Length: 507
Image 1 (cartoon, one colour):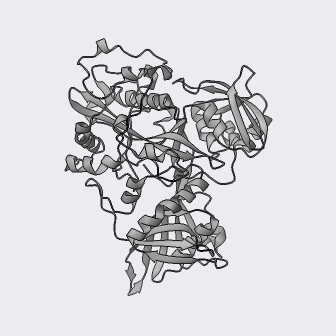
Image 2 (cartoon, rainbow, N blue to C red):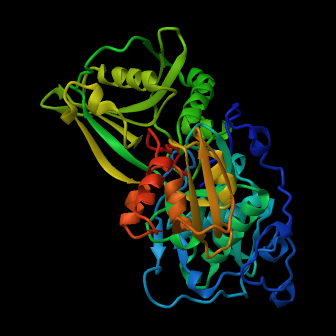
Image 3 (tube, rainbow, N blue to C red):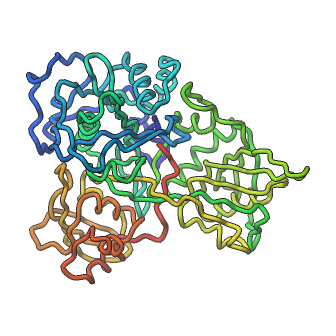
């Protein structure tokens, strides 16, 4: 899919450059830490005339135990790619060695329609008009980060990424790579293409200085081998419309047209982004797509809906929700369903005001709001918490640290302390032993030779990073080794955060 870069706010400081999809990022091959020697260009079966290939970037060919084909698609109202993602024979059985007769490189402008057609075939959703689809997606596509596997001149595998700002505990924003559109045609699986594409994109991200990569995984078992770990969870809240807030919330709600919503949403989203660990930035293209202003030929159109802005007592816009109403009648009685997947607030007041508005709607029996954080306070805002049901709590954002010192230094921590962390990373980017020193919530992290207090894989540290899962839980699962069990408690307290991380941007 194609969720774009940043949203043009102060939170995403690099928005201007990130939003310029025609800009090409300069990559120094010497910045990539190779683990296995890349094949020489002489070993290729045909000359490479366009785009950039992995040898140009100094990106390695992974070892055989990494080779796995996978498909990942989109469950994102922002990006618009269809679902149908799967794990392709990653469980058991021998892995195939990379087929070096197939080329892997970034694509050119004139190859965008073929790229669009290829991922459509990969997800069993053939694209009827690849030219129109590619044109509509151009505003969310960064050519220099759009990779394909080629069999001759035909695209048979795809991977894309785009730069975003990720909010981390404490409110800082770090530059990360958002990966999507990982697909391989059924005729070309088990030939190492997905692994070559993934490692190429990760290597390029590390060379650019992005501290991490993020994605949404179709199945749990696909991306751990690349160093990703589940870092946040989301749920769907299904609410009996008869529910009542314990107390009324001071403020106001206003129904606005789509153009007014489009004008106000970026500022509200910027405040929400700054306050929400685990969320990523959006740009103008993404806002247009989420409101149905921009439509993609390959996806269902956004249905007409309602747009509500809520304001606090001082008149500041503190929340936005877009919702649709499905007519339902039972024996001449209205039992309508309200559904929303775009619900953002800058603070708790905004959240409560949005719920207050939705619960005030007449003719409604049930309210369904998707992609909510697992710690949404609604059950405790209403008089009867059993009228609120959490459905489908599931892993959401998967994260992969690429620069451990930079990432750990960027976030805040709940307590002071000092920990020695030993990290294993089969791709090499995060491997090493590091000392994390925290004073008054602020941290420094640097390499050390001191004995390790905690030992873990990079995927485990990545899960721990946003505070969505505790160190004690990971230790109990056997994913963190500790010399002194008390140190798991120390790490649990340090890395924990007051609110659950949340990423409402499905890409």
